Length: 108
Image (tube, rainbow, N blue to C red):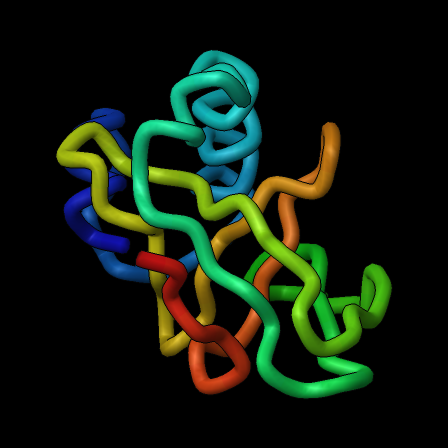
């Protein structure tokens, strides 16, 4: 998270607060869904896996996903998935979601 904050000229405190959340939303809009096809993707490996929305101050379950659902990570400028506290940022249409990495299997 700190690397993302530095790249976007934020305070690099490693905290996923409201400003970092808004910056991530904007970065996702700017990134474009087509570019995500060039990089590794992941599938969910457990039924009823919660996807969270929100920031460090408030989290809600956005939805749950079932096994074998393919997710689209959000990548940073070095083409690495954005991960904070073992949760990966994912693109769910026009929403940002967070899924725990233990529930993901990378597709080669």
